[in-house]
Structure formats: structure tokens, C-alpha cells
Amino acid sequence: MKVTCFNCNNTTTLEVLFEVESFACPHCVYTYKNTRSEGLKYFNKSEPYYYKYQFKVGSKANFDGIEYQVTGLLIKSSNGYEWTEYILESKKGEYLYLSESNGHWILLNQIDFDKKVGNHPKTVEYQDIIYDRYNYCYPTLVAAQGFFDFDIYSKFEIIEYINPPLMLSFEKLGANQTCFFGKHISRSAIKKAFNTTDLDKKTGIGQVQPFLFNIRNLGLTCASVAMVILVSHWYMNLGRVEQNVLNTEMSFDQYTNKEYVTPAFNLKGSSAPLSVRVHTNVNNSWANVQLALINENTGEETYANKDIEYYHGYTDGENWTEGSETNEFNICGVAAGKYHLAITPMKAPEDVQNQSLQISASWSKPSYRNVYMTFIFMIVFVIGMYYLNQNFENKRWEE
Image 1 (spheres, rainbow, N blue to C red):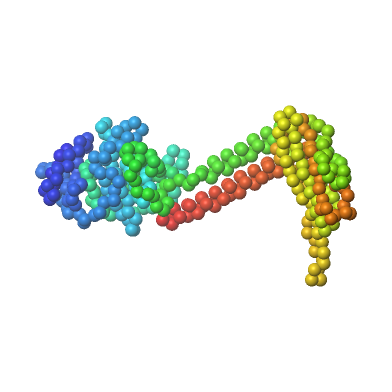
Image 2 (cartoon, rainbow, N blue to C red):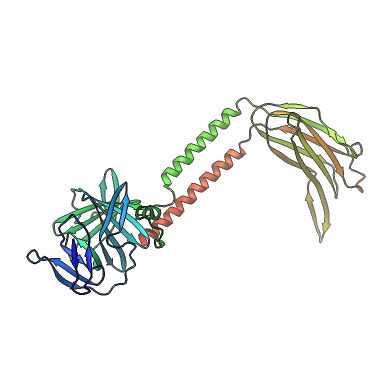
């Protein structure tokens, strides 16, 4: 169709498959109506409007392998809230509708919906999904461009229901009701469809913008993962018992210039921590133990170095203590294999009372510490996401 605007003398040409009822010149603010007898005739001069729309009339887009073109766009407002509606038509006469506000996009299709919603019920059901009433209003037409198969100045009532990322939007004109099924669509999908990289950034929370996670699915996923971890941990450590690999006392003087080397020992089973306990009678002094776990099959060496310190005294009328005569630590993730330990004890040179050090080591029973820590992390994460989601929804409904 070709229309020349008598105001700006610009000609707009676009192939459309519908009978044009309204035309809004993309180059100025004049609008026209189809008078049947005389065709399109000047109807109104709109208020000047600075367009911040993303796509022009005639812009091409590809959704699900079907090419569409923008045949018209409408700028509407209600209670200070403004949005843009794009009407897209394919070469076969199929239609899509895009709604954009503050950088948030919704893609809609017209559907059949028998139930009337003129009395604004709080919820409606469609395909076994319950939608909550979000808004109803009589929007004002702010500006328009392109070709339309309806009177763009008709006073439609819009009634909207949401279940993010889905929505049902009803347009009601008298006794007639038209329903559109919509879904949030990402900015990246819009860029791909229109083959562009230039889109306005989104602000605020979109009408059906989904939260980062589906909380119900997140909870079920974490519960399933927790069950798998628990069962696998139980199975991998079935029948396993603690294995003592060292329990001895050594003299500091005897091992001043050499290491204490243990006999070789075999560890069988899944990885577990090697727990080491060191005790020595330090008194206002310190001692130290250096320990090396050596894998005799691979030659891999794992080192640990721990101080044992104990100090006490009387200051300002109060007794005080610091440190302990015992220190315990783990070498984590020790796998099955053949090992020996090399130990070097040391003490403060001025400490003549402390003569020996007791040390014991065991390859531990299965530890549930990591399992519990994982469970706690997942629980805290799900609870945190739940409250963030609640805050997200509150802001959505505030807007």
C-alpha cells in the first residue's frame, strides 16, 4: 500500500495483507481514517512526540524461522506509565505483537479465550496455569505510526493477568473481547530477531520479567543433589573404619638433626583426611613439629608445619593463659595408597624442662563435615534466593 501524507508530502509504501482502517504518517503527526467512500482521509493532528522507539515501520524480524515486518506501532500511556506496542505481520498473514517498556519486552499472540473478564476477576486460568490480575485501565493513545486494521482511537479497556514469565492481556471494546497470550522475551532474543545490537538498556523490573531462579525448581534441584551426595557418600564409605597409622613419643634431643621416619602403611578406601594430634609439655614456651606425608608409589610429598605454644601469667590482678599444650590438624583428601611419615620435632633452645613430644595420626572414619557444609550452603542459598525473589516480586507489584 502507498500513502502520501498531504501535510509533509512524504510517501509511505508497505505491503500489507489487511484492509487498512487507520494510518499514521511515520514522518509527521497526521493520522488518517478509512472513510469507505473516499478511502483514507485526514482525521487528526496528534501532539508532537519524540520517538524513542527501537524499530521503524517496515523493520524486518525473524521469529521461529518466519519473517515478519513491523506494520505499525502505538505509544500508549496510563497513570504515568508508558509503553510501545509493535504489530508485526508475516507474508502469510500471521501476526505477532511486541510490547516494550523501559527496555523490557513481551512477545504476544492472539488466542481464543471464552471466559469474559469484564468484571475483572482476581485470577483467571489458562492451560492449567493460574494468572493473577495485575492491572486494568483505559490507556490513552500518545502517538502512532504505520498501518492498522482497526480504529486506533477506539477506547479499549486493557485487563492484564500475569504469572511471570507469562501473561494474558485482554482488550475489551464494548461487548467484544480479544485475548493475547504473552511471554517475556530477552533483549538478546530481540537483537537476534531484528539483527541489531542497538537496544535501550532495561530499567526497573518488567511486568513479567522472571526472577533469576525458579524457587520451586531450585529447591527441588538442591534436594535431589543433597540426596545424591548423601547416598554416594554412604556407598563409597560402606564398611570403612578408622585406621591408626601412628602413635608414638619422641625425644627432642634424639631427633635434633634427623627425622623420625615411620614404617610404611597402606590406606584402602576413598579419600579421607589424615588427622594428626600433637602434645608436648610446653610451659611459657613453644615447640614445633614438621611433618611430611610421602606416597611411596608416586613420590608425592605433602607437608604440614605446626607450632605448639602455651603461655600463662598474672597481670593487673588477673590470671591469663594463651595457647595450648595440644594441637590438632588435618591433611585433607589423602587418597588410598602406600605411605610413610617423616617427622621433625623442635623446641625452644632455652626450654630445658620439656624433653619429649607425643604424636598420633589416624586416617579418619568417613567425615560428614563436607556433606553437612554442602547441605548448609544449599539451604542458606535457597532461603536467600527465596527472600530475594520475594523482594523482587514486591517491587514488581509496586510498579
